[in-house]
Amino acid sequence: APRAPFGPARDRVRERRPETLRYLADAPQQDPEGNKTVVRFSRKTKQQYVAAEKDGKATGWSAFFVDGKWVEGKK
Image (cartoon, rainbow, N blue to C red; front, top):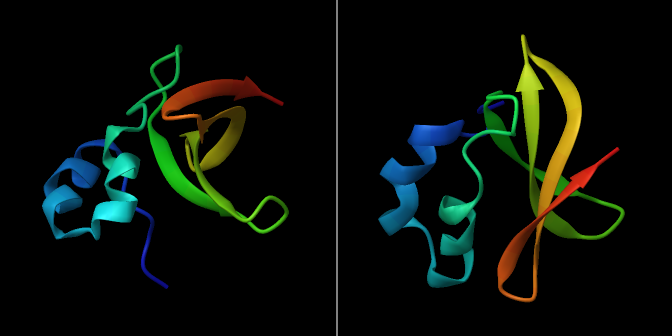
């Protein structure tokens, strides 16, 4: 399965995305500790979000797009 694009790779594909998904390219590239983020899909809420990973493992940090801006959340 293709890997979800990390940080700078999202910038390179921004213009190729449909207009409705371009907000994903504006998502935080890293969490406050500097860990890279990856785009995910929540089946529970049926929405895209970004989550931080360190050494391939989830850190618990995430951000959701709410009312036109990215809002941080911590598990």
